[in-house]
Length: 361
Image 1 (cartoon, helix red, strand yellow):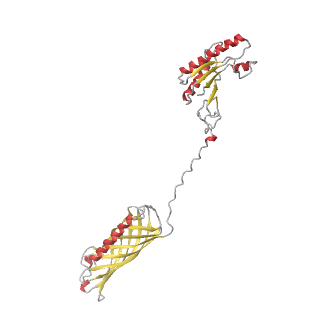
Image 2 (cartoon, rainbow, N blue to C red):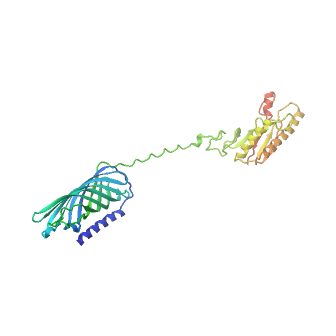
Image 3 (tube, rainbow, N blue to C red):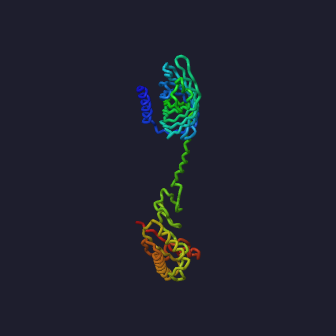
C-alpha cells in the first residue's frame, strides 16, 4: 500500500514539475478531441478490495476559455477479499465531466466534476457473486500539458462517490455503507481533431504616408518646406532662396493729402501687419522705407523726399504702438527706386508706397 501511495505522490510531483516547463503560449481552441487514459484505482475500505487498474476513453469539446465538456467511458478491475476466499471486481461505467481551467497555456491546470453511472460486478474465487448498477459522482484536480498542436498529455486525481449498496449483506461483498468512496488517478493523452485554429492577427494600420516636405510650401512663399529656413513668412513678402523675407510692400497704406497722418483704411492694414510681425519668429531689424512719385519739379521732389521720411516714421510709431518688438528704422527715399512709369498717374500711384525691408545680419 505504501508503495502505491508513493507512486501517486510521484505522479503529482511530475505534474507540478511540468508547470516549470510551461511556455507562455496562450491558446483558445474549440475543437472536439479524443482522450484515451489509463487509471489507477485506490479502493476505499468499505469495498473489501485491493487497489487495481483500468482505462477508458473520453470524447470532449473545448467550449470557451475556461470550460471543457467531456463524455467518458471506463473499465476498472481490482482484487477483493469477500468472505475471506478472495476474488475480483469489475467496474464499468461512464460520466459526463465538466472541466474548469484556471488558465489556458502550455501547462493548464483544471478542476473537474463528473456525474454518471457504473455497474459493479463482484465475484469470489468460487464463482459466486453479485452485481449492481449505481450512480457515481467524481471531483478532482488535474492538468494538461501541450506537446504539439494536436497532442497533449493529461492527468488528474479524483475522489469517486458510489451509491452502490446492494452488494452489502450476508455475503460480505462490501461493508454496509450509504456511499462507497474510492480514489482514481488517471493519466493519458488528449488528441484534438483537426487543425488548431490560429489567432487572427489584427491588421496593423497602414502607416501614414510619409509627408514629403519638398512638395509642400506651408507659408506659400515659393520655397518648399525642406529648404525654407524662415517658415511662416508673412503673406505678400518677397523672400530669398532660403525662404527668409527680404521686402514686403504695404499695399493700401495711404496717408491724408500732403500729410503723414494715416488714413483709417491704412490703420486697418497695419493692424494686420502688426499681428503677423508679432507671430512671425523672424526678429531681424526692419527698415520701413517710404517712397514718393516723380512730379517733374526739383523743389517738389525735395519736398516729397522729406514727406516720405515723415510717413515712414509714422508707420514705425504705429507698429511700435501695436507691440511689434523688431527694431525698426524709418527711411524716406523720395522719388528713388520707382517701380512703375512716373509719366502716368497709374504709375505714379504705384510709386507712392511704403515697404518693410528686413536688414541682413
